[in-house]
Length: 408
Image (tube, rainbow, N blue to C red; front, side):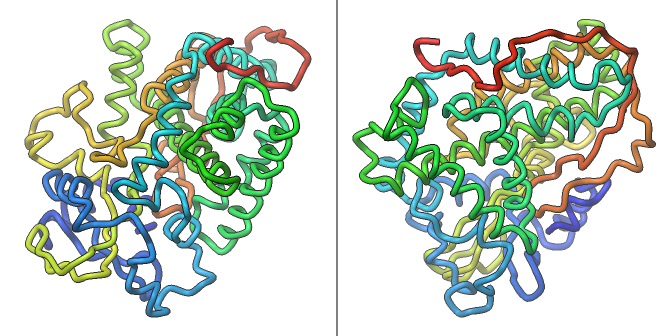
């Protein structure tokens, strides 16, 4: 799977897999650990909507139960069972999903946009006098984490620590479990602090939600919202910036006003959805899917990027439409609840870079851009750029990020 996300053209690989296997193809997650990659829109809708047939609960994963997946596997931080909304089905999922929906619903998007502008200007101010930067390491990697951290009442230093832990977690490599433990410890410490000193942030809101029965459920709700909100939004920002500085037509249309920022963001979602491959569903019975014999306990991976090039969405020879019919947010009851919030953060980050970094130019060949090692996301590892030197941007001295809840 990592071979696909590291490829210069994943869609060419998807086409080859479709030609050989159809819309559901056998893949290997790590040596000896097999899965099905679901690439067809119709089949994706089946496994995301038929909860009686396909579960999110990894305790149904046959290879894990049979010991084929090692307890030390780097896959487990992303695929192992957690007692949270991601690993729950049906009524239990609805109970745990409601606090997330309620928390997201209380976010003041106007205040969030101001907060993200503040963060972006702060970050750009650290490198604006140099005339060069890495738009991933110095910008895209931190905007969403600092923005999401502000929602939970964390400060900038904690935001940076969370980012480092999440890089390890999403990599599904040997340090993945260490990153996961570090990530949860930071959030546990934040929860304990809020229990002593509640305030107007999402940590306090989750802590007081009647659907969450104890501290572990509150902690796991924080884990879901922060991890999902950060990594995917980082990828979205990075890919949009990558398109801006490597695709002359895309950049000209965007800067010339022929392509609105929101249309540009959706064009990126069609080609490079933030979550390339979404883990996972576990078959609850033997079933035929897309011509493949799925067995009880098999693991299925949602090929969200592959589905966007499914001919039922984008017929051959036709450009993908600039609309939101893509599968970037998945489908069914587990569909991403924070689409509008992610869009506010991404749009603001891209728009700020567009206006404050004139003359952006990639300092390496586009062919030299590499991708973070992960079977799940395909994010540029670096985007070294040069630009015209811009003035320093002043901003408040405090490193405490301001809350952006209802009363911001």
